[in-house]
Amino acid sequence: TDYLAAYFTADEKVDISDLKSYLSSYLTSYMVPQAFMQLDEMPMNLSGKIDKKALPQAVMMEDEIVPPENETQEQILEIVKEVIGDLPLGITSDLFSFGLSSVGCIKLCALLSEHFGRTLKVSDVFENSTVKAIDSILRNADEEKEYELREEYPLSMTQTGIYIECMRYPGSTIYNIPELHKLGDSVDCEKLAKAIEKAVAAHPYLFMEPVSDKDGIVHARRRDDYKFETPVFKKDTIPTEDELVRPFFLDTGEVLFRAEIYETKNGNYFFLDTHHIVSDGGSLDILKRDIDRAYSGEEIEKEKYTGYEFALDEEAARKSERFEKAKAWYDGYFAGCGGETLPVKDGKEENGHIGFLKIIAETDGAMIRQFCLDNSYTLNAFFTTAFGLALKSYTASENAIFTTIYNGRSDGRLSDSVSMLVKTLPVYLECAPEKKVLETIEACQKYIL
Image 1 (cartoon, one colour):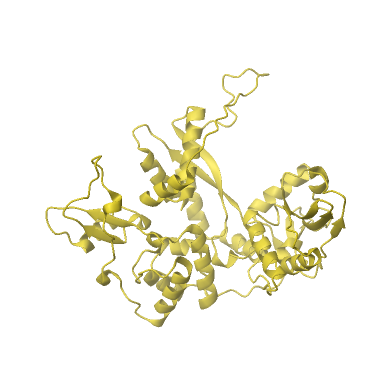
Image 2 (cartoon, one colour):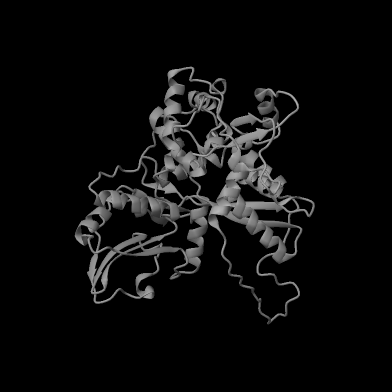
C-alpha cells in the first residue's frame, strides 16, 4: 500500500519531529507525510528535473512507530492492518496517510463496531485517525443499542421526497434501478433462484411497505415474514426493455423489487430491478455479492442494523444539538449564495433551444490516479472539482454552486445494509482567478471529507 513520503534538503540537520509538527499545524492530517528523508541534494535527470525513480526508499524510523500501550490498542491495530495491509504502523500513525480510503473507513468502522460492541461512525475516524485516538473514542462510545421491534418506522427525509415525487407522477420509472445480466452457460438457474431467495431474506428492508396515517404522514411498515420466490420464465427471447422495466406503485402493497430469471433460446438472464425508496447503488452491490455467496453455498447472515433502525437514529439526530449546529454552519456557509441554474436561460428566446457541445477524448486513468496519489487527493475531490470548474465556465460565474451525492454510509453498521441511504451534499466551490487549481482541489477535499 502506498503512503506519503517527504524528501527535502537543508543547510543543517533538521529534527524530523519538529518538521512533522510544523506541517501538522498547516496541513490536514491525511496530507502530512508519514516518512521523511533528508538528502544532501536531490537526484536530477538530464532535463534538470528531480529524478523520482532515483530517490532512495523512504522508511519510517523505528522511534516514529509508537507501539500499543494496552490490549485494546493491539486489537485495534490488528483490525486496521486487516483493512489497509500489514504496514509499519504505530498508535500515532495517521491511517489516511497509509492508504485508508473512504470505503476502507466504512469497513474499518464496521469491524471495530462488531468487535468491541460499540457504535463507531465514519466521522469519528475522520476526526480521530490514529489508533490511539480511536481507542479513546471507543472508551467513550455508546454501547450498541437494543432496538424495540416496531410495526412501523419513520422514513428518512430523502425517502419522503421520493415518495412525494412518485405519488405526483404515478406510473413513472424514474426511480427504478434496473440491471440485466447475461448468465454464463454453467450457471444453474434453479440453484441461482434459491440463492436469490436466501440473499433477499437477509435484507428485510426490501420488503418495506410505505403506508400513510390519518394525518398524511408516511411510514415504513415492516414485513419480515414476507416469503419471496424467484420466478423463472422460459421465453424464446429476452423481453424488451419496456417489458422488463415496469413501474412500481407505492400505494398498492406490492414488493418494491423484482428479481427474475429468464431462460431463452439465446441464453439465460438475471433481471434485477429495485425501487430507489428501498435501495441504492451500494445496496445492489451488497445484494449481488450475497447472491453470489449464497450460490457458492455460504450462509448469509441477516442484517442486524437495517434501514429501519437507521431511520430511527436519523429522526433522533434531527432533534439533537449537533444537528442545529450543523444547520447553522451550512446556513452561514451558503449565506448570500446565488447562481445560475441549468440549463442557462439568460439571453435565450422564449421558444429557443439550448445548444450543447460534445467533446470526446481519451484520458489516461492511471495518470489521474497517480496525480491524486502524488498530491494526497481523493479521486472524489478531483472529479468534484473538475465538475465545478466546468460548471463555472459554462455559466460564466465566478464560483460554482451545485449538489453532489455521497453514499450516506457514515455508520460502520451500515456496511452490509440494503436500504436507501444516499444523501445529497451541497457544494460551494470558490474558483477565484488568483487561486491555483491545486488549492481549489485541496479546499474541495477538506469540505467533502
